[in-house]
Amino acid sequence: MTKNPLSRAWYYFRTGWSTYFAFIFAAINTLTVTYFLAIDNYPILNQIFPSFIQYVVVVSGLAFPILITAGYLHYKKTSAFKAEADINIEANPHLRRILTNSELILSSYIKFIELIPKITNQEKLTEDEIKELFLLKESLKEQIDKRTEF
Image 1 (cartoon, rainbow, N blue to C red):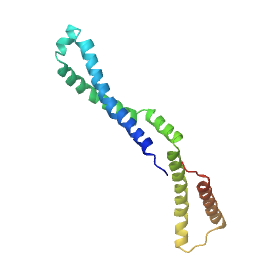
Image 2 (cartoon, rainbow, N blue to C red):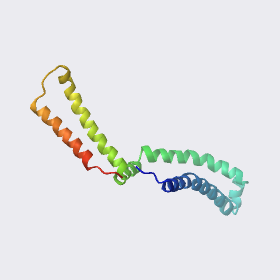
Image 3 (cartoon, rainbow, N blue to C red):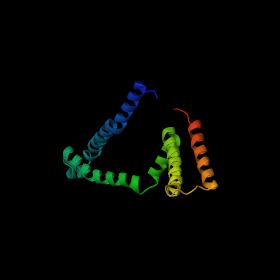
Image 4 (tube, helix red, strand yellow):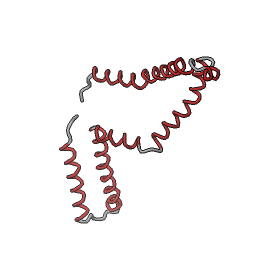
């Protein structure tokens, strides 16, 4: 696997920008715009929030719990995150390979766990069990042979 430093730097830049930089500046922009275009121009709202700092404290005090709850609901209580995870596995060949490999490994483990007691008791395997082992071996070999590098 070759590593392209320029592509990796570009990815890290985009992640840093979208996750941190843009988020922080969007929050600052939203607070500034809403205060100076809405609160400052309406006397009744200006009485409730006489200064920008008070407005930021109150909105932050309300926004943090609301946004934490929204994030929790997104991950734990809605189907949105499951859909995102499904799309990531469908679109990402690395994740798809991990899933396929895991399924093969688990089926191998199950077969081995079934056969280990017989082998440790020095019992002979039946023809069907031997055939299943060879089919499992062929399935694993086929998976290894058909996979490609990314």
